[in-house]
Amino acid sequence: MGLLKTFSPDEIHRYHRVLCHSVDVRSHYEMLVWLQGDMQQYLPHDIMLTAWGDFQGGQIQHNVLSKIAGVRSQHANAQAITPLLLNFFARWVESGHRPFSLNTVGGFCVDDDCDHSELCAALKTMRTVVVHGIKDERGSHDCLYAAFSAKEAFTESERSAMALVLPYVDTALRQVAHLPHQTSTIDEKTEELILQRDFGLSEREAEVLHWVAAGKTNSEIGSILDISSFTVKNHMQRVFKKLDVLNRAQAVSRLKALRLDA
Image (tube, rainbow, N blue to C red):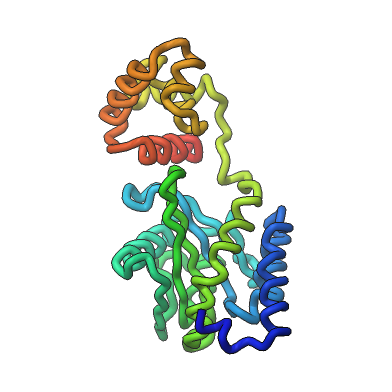
């Protein structure tokens, strides 16, 4: 709250207005305009890199927001930036889920072979980053946000601003539809066949996993498939074993990764 203590009443009113605009964001373009517009006064950055998914299992997706030419989500080299995002997430967990910042003189790209990627090239010119996340206890994935800047360091007030504005940034991004490369291109029947062929799931187990990924409870799935919730639970235990995962969230993340790779 240190940042707000320095504001005059008029500045607090402006700050509130900027944050409230998050509820109006509906597209990637509107998100970019908001972040690269008024939000720059509180969290100045050149690239906003977001990630979500199963960080423990390494199954994550990403989104890129930047006004730098060519630095776009669909052009990003996922293999090059995933290790960077996983490293940031591990540091965030170690920090007690608090925002942290890093400075460097050599940029933030971890793959020397990714020069063809505009994002990797841009990350090599960045000198500082502030990172924070959202721990999603009810959903199937956590979210991480990394704001990069070409300037030498973030000020203390800018670092503290990350904690204040992140819930609004997260709310805005959740209202934006996935880009084409972030959504499944296979139908439900094909998905079930792949689960049976590649992972040994039965037809019923594949059906149960489909409804779990849709956010249904065991009781709801039982009603849909006309089986008991206890039977649903048993099916999911076998699914965990066959997918080599420990819980529902990891199973859903594995299914989402399958959909993207198909």
